[in-house]
Length: 579
Image (tube, rainbow, N blue to C red; front, top):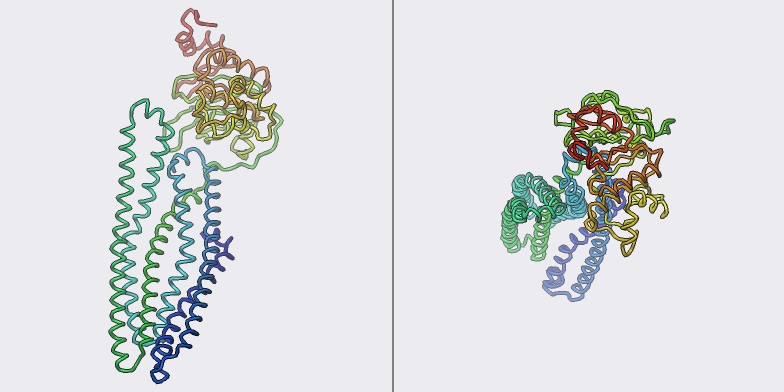
């Protein structure tokens, strides 16, 4: 954590200095009050005659000291919050940058809910810990030890009483905090669970309502929330017993001091003003210890959160950049060399010994049954995963040799599940190329067959898209995603079942526009319909993670039984539906 704090060390140092000044002012007050009582009111050093002018003088001194303390406390708050907020801000940015470099399996292992909790709630807890540490630890420590020092200055007996009681009180606190500390980590994990359920249910609210599962989800969320509250109550019960216990011990010390002080006053060893000052210092000590209890609670929770944040910050991305980021002579060529792949931790091979070359500008379609490895195959091209065996080459260079940004700049992707943002339509398309002007955006929309419904909207390309594209139909969302992919100045275009929600005519117009407007772009199309792929230069048939067919529509009809089965099921055995 030091690397974050040291950037804002001047603020932290100024906060500490201001706090030292504030506490010093507080510690001076009881001694002055002792003089007010002994000399100004009782006149112990003036034959029992009080001195009103001395009361006024010392009273004004106390008011001035209090004013200086207030100003120092205010400045301490300013410098402390500057430190804590900046530390949290930088930490949150670093966590987000690290997340953006994680591979898909790493994101899955952490879980979306956990990542959200770590970047929001956990870092807030760390911010609070830094703030409390700078302000609370300095103030309370100085207040406690300063009170003990001044108690010794007033009376050796008073000092010994407080010093003997101090380890007993601290030991009581340590016992309770030891019981509470493991619960803070459990609290954050349970908060992960709640965030995960919330995200799933908000994203899938249409499915929940369609399946009439509202009650089930209410129960599931209720159980997770009950677990959180149960743990929170355990923490609160621990502190509910700790605070009275510490209070009881400290009040016992006050009673003991009053009893001893009364005896010493009667013997003429001390004065009533000193006894009053001793009680005030004891009260300050009590307040410091109670605040230290709250401080340790905040620190314990902050450290539990810091361990979770540190795990995120220290997790190295599994996919490391290679050294290559330059241009290649060949543009748009893809080669699979004896590629096999299994998802991390699954142990099940998804692709087996794939040998495949796709030439620049070629349109290649991929078909096969669900789960045969179509999406996995294309995910290896932009290196969303690393191959288990073999190599994938783009433009003659192994994808592992590329810097990931340079590789993915060559590849544009549109998925079946369209991811849109709460931005105007124009900005959603412009994600493909942030430097594109309005005409380029409209051209990409025309290729994707999206220009018609966009211009028909009241605000045209400025129409806002609702969260997750809820204001658009499935086909409209897919066309915007395709427009975004087309706009990107990439050499390779991957359409992963991205036109499944389009009718056949719109889909045919889309592919015709792609052939006309992007003839040099290598296109890989994953589709389920024969009508979607029959115009491709080549069609690949995957089965069980292996390529069992590779050729044109006519060639596969003649040579590949699996392709004929697909054709017969969709077009009829006599091709009566073949249009």
